[in-house]
Image 1 (cartoon, helix red, strand yellow):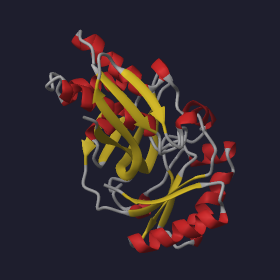
Image 2 (cartoon, rainbow, N blue to C red; image 1 turned 45 degrees about the vertical axis):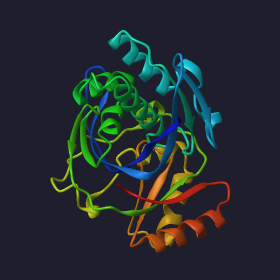
Image 3 (cartoon, rainbow, N blue to C red; image 1 turned 90 degrees about the vertical axis):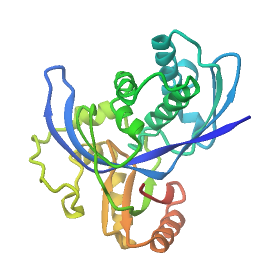
Length: 272
């Protein structure tokens, strides 16, 4: 019997660059929330692990063993010394290289599924440690709730954030995270203690990302023109989001923006 699992895309409501380690990795402080948008993972029992990628953005997702889902499953197989006898079909509904963490969310969903299939031999801390070796956003995606994330992504502190009605816009530009960080020239941020206040939300990577993809400015302007209470870039871009007063306002804004910019991917949703 086929079972379907969700892999929620995330939004960085705020992202501050707080330092840089000797190994070159930047440290961050980010307020992150999962959303109702995301990919799906269909799973059926099988003789061995297989992965098929389908959907609108399948062409953008690495196939085979290079996919983060496969890498995560193989890591668990090595640690457990057993096979994950599951066939997975990944439905790619969200763009890659957008700052939505879709690939990490996919991998986290797969790790939860495999662990449950085996009777949960690994606790959350073990899964997070394995996940961090695959990608910095895996620990957050495994927790799958609003959180304040610090360090390089390994420190995840649950927080309470009221649900928000949002419009997410991706202008069709794939941005490599490494390229955005390489272009980042800002100073270390002084982060407000109350980063739950929308007035204090910002993304320190936005100037670097806009230097690579100026269309990000157009996206933010479009969201603000439709009455967004806040409009920010998520992650390292190029996707942006706007926060609206209610779901109806968000739906109307999404429709107007999609009609004006048919080449953009535009979705109304809600944070979780």
